[in-house]
Length: 453
Image 1 (cartoon, helix red, strand yellow):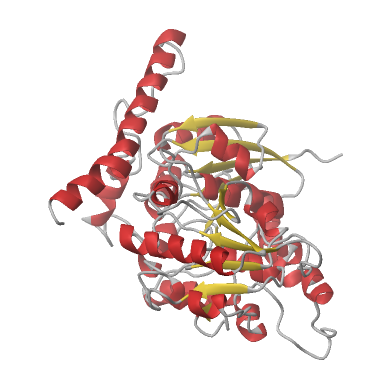
Image 2 (cartoon, rainbow, N blue to C red; image 1 turned 120 degrees about the horizontal axis):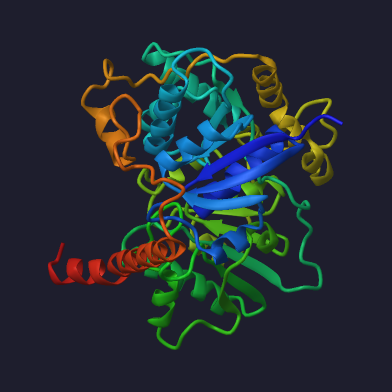
């Protein structure tokens, strides 16, 4: 029996952990997974990790420098970097410092968790240098290659796949059960208290107008927790301020998005990646236009989708359906054709475009790299020559020198520190995180309000 491949996933939030672990499963089906959480403001709590529902054989919290020491010490076949762009760039330069010449090193994979609607060039160039840069659709793959080729960088690493968490049973109408509307909120879109309160009130108003429906406000995190983005105005607190409270058929829910979608008859959001999960299942999906169609909101990404709608239209009974051609370009559903059958739910649910087959090319690339006895050193576009001012600051934030080596003291020896001291350090970190999160969600909004900022 062939030996199971060793895969390490380094993630910096609950959502990216889910993406990274599920991507590892798609790329290397038979693997031993070791998980690492990058220490920072969005390090997920145990509750958040449990809600994601993806387990690792081992899971620990590390700094960037500690992770580099780990992959130098332990032999991993594949490393999936489920991180923001700056952290990816730091690991890539750290890996280049570890293996400056062709060597037996892990295959380095990175990509995006969901819809890419902002900082396209910035985020992509910070990910350049990985062996595979995964694109979630044909549309994204074309954009990614254009960015790399536009600066004269090698675009061979760009590999078209699909979102790894697309799946679940195809949509079945409610029938005898209550018609269920799911409003998938986002931690930072929109960002103003007034806009978020407006959307919450409209969801509650929809429940009042349709007492036979159940309206679920799907939350990403609890107050005090952080996810991929900061949430300064949690919907839980806004709900407390609604006069008379939420109606009986409207409630706040947590849990795995896939499980929530199992009972959904309409998914409503501003621009959440949950919309793609919903559309993959053929669930009616609405991308809200109440606040305009703006790049800052990310809903401009859904132009041409057939899903743009307002709460007024939803109140009147509209159930938007996705445009098949747009969905195919986004890697969600196949384009209609003579050999696609009738295009019904059963055909769409089993098509490989949005399933495991979407990873066939990526798996082949990984297998080819694993078969090589030596891999060249990572070659990021950003170097001390191409970005002499930008790159050192990115590396310094992760306690790396401009050449990618750890700064003095960045890695603490495994021995020499008592268990009591390590526990004390952990408690101090948690206390500091709690103070930071309290400041973001409680103190900062008050200061802005008082200062009319």
